[in-house]
Image (cartoon, rainbow, N blue to C red; front, side, top):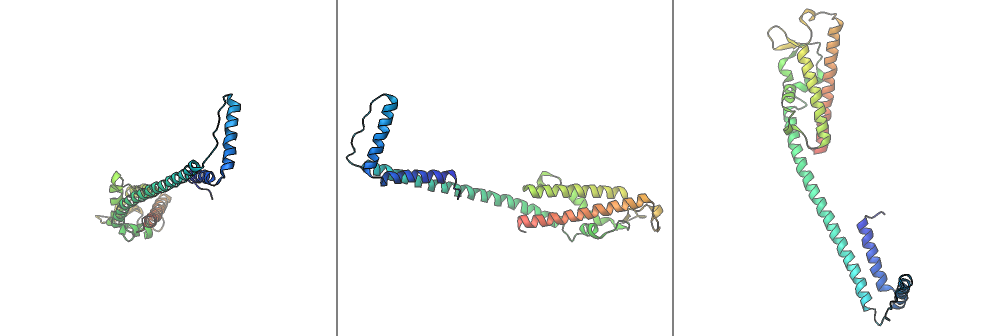
Length: 234
């Protein structure tokens, strides 16, 4: 319906060439004489146009225009094809880099890891084992470098958001928790209130904050996993 400029130009040149070939010589003679007369009228210089004895030159010109237009169009289409082919190859190479990085993420921070289960199921009003945050700690420690940035902008934006929220959560958890006796169990409830039925408001607020942050981190983790699988087909 709306061809690009190259196609329009091709059809215009082909049409001109076809018109030159198909137009009877008498009509062309009249047209040429009109052009000469118009030029003479405007320039004040008298030019003459010889009578056409043969239209061979017109056929040559017409077929030449058509051939050049078609050659130009074929060459342009080939250039567009090769450009698209190169772009597709580059896109596949970039995708392969992101796929390898995403597979590393899944290996280090899978959905069935202890940390993800902690984020999904744990109520921080209860104690938890210190190794339940290992995957989160590793992610926060190692996934903020140039080597762990995704080339795809949407994936990288999601990774940055996940990293920021995980960092905020684990930092707040570390501030709020302490070992029970000699470990390895940790609790966000202060020793003075552990086991009590009624906690002070500041303890309730602390537990609620940790539970809300852990739920948010879990959802972001799952969204990132699904985004990576959808974009990288893995």
